Length: 506
Image (cartoon, rainbow, N blue to C red; front, top):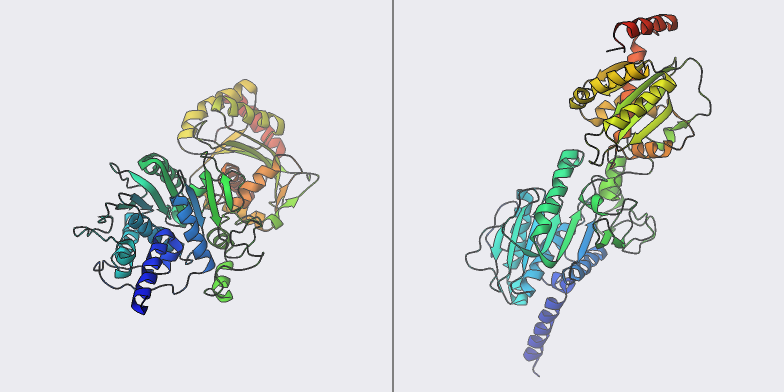
């Protein structure tokens, strides 16, 4: 065989290998950067990687396995800048569409602009001569849109925002890249709910039976889309994991600094991701913010040592001091079945303004039960005042609370606190005290759950207890601004109030 014939045979063999292996394909085509504007389909694109790193190869092999598996499920979590989207959301769909005639893929991101950018990069990669020679197909002549195009082998690609919907189209596979835009959206319960509903009701219903799903993201919040799929007790593990949706997901949790015994790259603890590219100074700038480092870079949104509340600042007491001023507070769930809890808290405020947590109750119940538990605590602890938050729930429950207070002789002044910004702002008073070690915790069974909420806040799945703590902190601040009440005067006031209106109204 002549040298020319041998070279031609080697080229053909290499192209066949590319069609069989996604990782091999990725090493033979110009992996694209992020074009900021539309480019001509045949324009040359800059290489962003000249050599695949270990985690790139892992992502590519995992993508191929998922796309070739009926009902395949893959979850990829990795730090910003690790090229996870380039390989999983651009290169992999290009290879899948080109090697499977009549295949259809939907790509969804937090917004239409990001989805179109991924679509533009994918379309541009398909248009390269190297790609066309390997796949033996190309874009159809009339396919110019970045968010919807077809190939000459009959395959089709569609891109959309997660919440924009893509009705009327079906797909063999769905790639979801960054379903939530950033911190502000991740901290919004409304946005998290809407995003997950769009995932369940819009995207998954587009799958052809047996279709595969890939989710690519950095973890902003425990309650993001990945967090709602993963088991409740997931703590950064990788591997084949049976999740709450009933599917077994392949989970790649690629931490910037390995801290897991199940690291998919089999790194030792302390080893960093992609050391050929990221040096220590790169990582150091992100370590300064505990929440950013734990969520975006370690993929565990709630660090064990806490975010706004610190475990080291949680002081335990064995005996209550004398002369505490007792207050109570309630954070109520909107509905019984919405996943939230109603939580009551009792605390004592010392003469120095320290808060001693005394008693707690939580339940997923309607007002007919939680009002009784609240009044049980009023009768037992006799607080100076009880705090709730203004709004629809006040209007719905105030009359019932007032009536039952009279019937049960559970006399306590109600303070309805106004809305003041977001949850962190409402909790600021108690966060500040906790940071100085001035929130005291008893040795009681309910403490563990409440402390876990605090340590995860504001990135945790549940924060109803933190909301109640925040009201207790605001109540303690109110007591601190006022002259300490005379006990005898208070008893006389309660007696007079009982005869005049049956309770102490704010």
